Image (cartoon, rainbow, N blue to C red):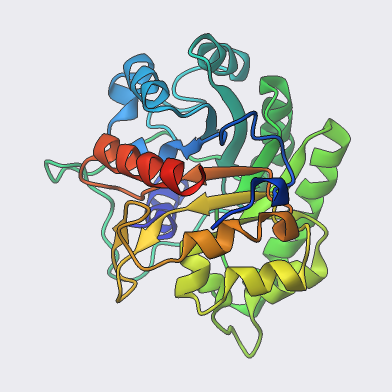
Length: 300
């Protein structure tokens, strides 16, 4: 299950050949590898400390948090979570939230765990209803970016309403001294009533973008072309791979996406942080270890 489907179901249920000097940030002799913790959604809340220690052991130094069954930040307050990561040699760079609750699609099933039992999580806060609270917590935790992971875009009215919320959040983040970005799936690149949601977001906001490179590719967009059209707009990346049919998520390097070409355009994109992610993998640790090994070799 990819995140967008997860968000639609859970929110409805709970709320209703690379040149290193071409890169715009300091690699400190080696890449700063980031991980999106949604990769471990099905297991991290059972042992937060142990999971994070294993992630650090693979070589990850930057973390982007997501949704937790425990609520809050894996059962912790912002400063507590930031301190926990620091003690493990990692830093908290970004946090995901949603723009507004999704309506449960007709016939959709609630997400389940490995035993087939419905996943129960606390009510999911969103930018429409809890914007200032979420911004304040992100600033309290010292994260560099608050990210909208997804938002309703089924109709043109949905898109317009979502853009208004995104612009309001962008202003609040600026006042709080943090960045704000939007994370895409492939749906943002499909026409809605004759308009492309992602193009509307780019033209009607000044927020930054966290480009999910795989979903953009599935949506028919060339990430490098997007970077050239909107240079400096993409400080955050999500890095995952897809099979030839673009139906199944794979560890980086095991699919069809040409990451050498994309990383070579990092300066044009304005990329500052990248986060490996694998939505609902069978073995999250094996997946991130494989992805880390592949990118480590590629980025040498």
